[in-house]
Length: 217
Ligand SMILES: C[S@@+](CC[C@H](N)C(=O)[O-])C[C@H]1O[C@@H](n2cnc3c(N)ncnc32)[C@H](O)[C@@H]1O
Image (tube, rainbow, N blue to C red):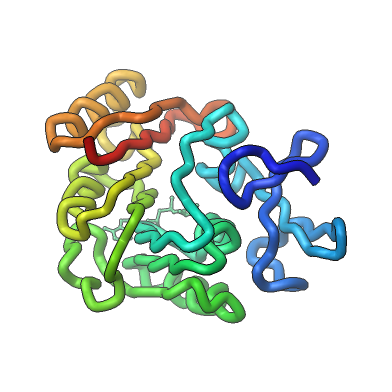
């Protein structure tokens, strides 16, 4: 098992892994492998946009072992569980607004004390202030309109240093070229006062999606 570069991400024979904080527990049927007396979970780029970003060559992942991460659009916790493996001494506040997904999320947070499930709406950052103190990084994957503004509103509200947003072009405008939507999202983030660090498309793993990484200037 080799370190890929970004904190807590490993690679073996072209597949990505995180070191499990909760051995023997699968979150989404992922493969578990033992190496050097420790258990690693395979991180599938077809099931996670963050894994897709790493797989297509993205390396600007700001998570540290002790980061506090506000994760918007956690769904059942597939990607958030890998983020919790990385930020094993930190905290991942997982916001999800669909009750059915939230119930799955609560189950998947069991055994992972770093993950805190919050039923809330990402467009209303003040709703979950009591759970999200000292946020370092906002990660967002909400697949709805105004994706750039929603993450910037949260960055502003929590004073976070870093932002990472998975932009789904079809959620903004199905008639526009995806490249144009990604450019518009990056331009909007700059207008809101942040500096773009990386922007790359996630195909072939996630069609018509891009990851934009940005930070305070
Ligand atoms: C593409 S899925 C997220 C997948 C997840 N990030 C992963 O990789 O495992 C998008 C999720 O965002 C949620 N969502 C959409 N708009 C939201 C909002 N305003 N607040 C909170 N969650 C939202 C949806 O219910 C859905 O579960």
